[in-house]
Length: 191
Image (cartoon, rainbow, N blue to C red; front, side, top):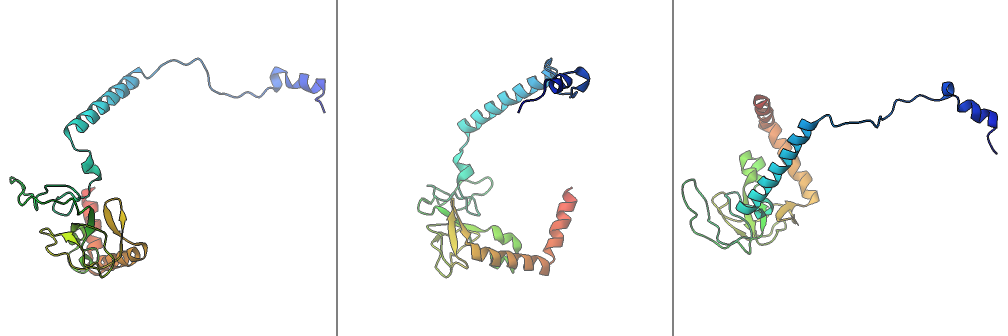
């Protein structure tokens, strides 16, 4: 089936063509200043990245730290670093490759700041197992694991079923002690 020639001629008339405002190809550079600023930004970012790689330690981004600043899985760590002091009692943390949070469940019933207490461990423990850890001033003894853990990167995190129970206890603790209201007030004061 073909179109009739009369229909084609009618469609080609100027008054019957659809007028669409589209892209005009007669463009010119209007944002020279923006382009220059962006180029300067890129040069500065490349320079900062090179400086950071040369003078810093990029492995610290991926390395797990215990709650007093020791790097899990690294050699020659100080037991505790204090302002103005050098590291004391240097210890080999090489076998202790994983970070284990010691107070995820107990911290919900006592001091909520202890939730961040962590130690370096040899392997991620299962519930009831004695934790093989390197004690520090926040966690002077290793004790037994209160929940099953699994390795995620360099961290021993609670397994799926235990996460629900932990979040439930944290939520209950926040409501019982009115910490949630305090946290919201702190956020409001920061704004």
